[in-house]
Image (cartoon, rainbow, N blue to C red; front, side):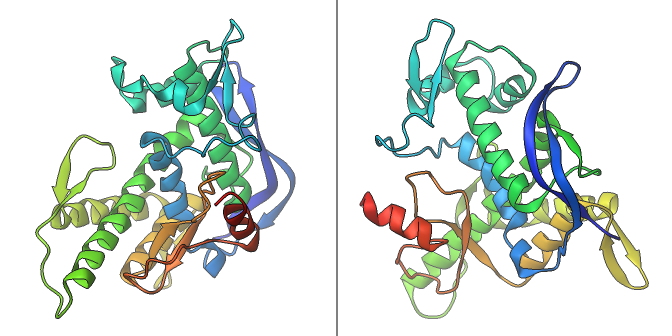
Length: 281
């Protein structure tokens, strides 16, 4: 099966469906088996995880204008200020994200902040990899949030694996079973690594049933969603682990593969991010 993407994407307001993304520029084929795509499912999950756990930029003069919101009274809030009271809401952050995706003229600083984060980070992912929808030309924000939340489990699972390996490394000697509880992606509690593994396998299998077809003994994705499930399965089977880029000033949303477990050196995705991080150190 051939999967396509467009040159870029932009956000617009759909009067019936809320905020949505549409394609711009020429369409081209995606080589989903390329190493460039290795981190794609994890980075999509990271978008939601980063918002859920308020992974926000350090506020410095060079970027504060980008990461501010203004309500109807022209009061300016930093993202951290706007999201400070989110735990006091009667709605879950998942409900608030969908509200942000379907409300055109918001005044609540929390919704404004979520809209800015969702728009910025989802557009970043789509412009890097393409559109997760069946068609590469259009997707609503609420739909991509729903899909990305499934990959949030994948992202958090490999974080749990990293935590376990780091503990084994610290203890030294032969690998031992770590009896630890790991955070569930939705923040509702903790779970064992074994139970987490079962959930991940179920999610991957469900994704493959819906979006992958076996043709002549080969798994072929029907669309980007199918490709992401196949990529996630392959990377987890190969034991690949990804860590956030060390540049927290934007913050950079790219993930960097960890090749030496236990090494504490800072992982930077590019020379640009390295110079940015060093400048503000």
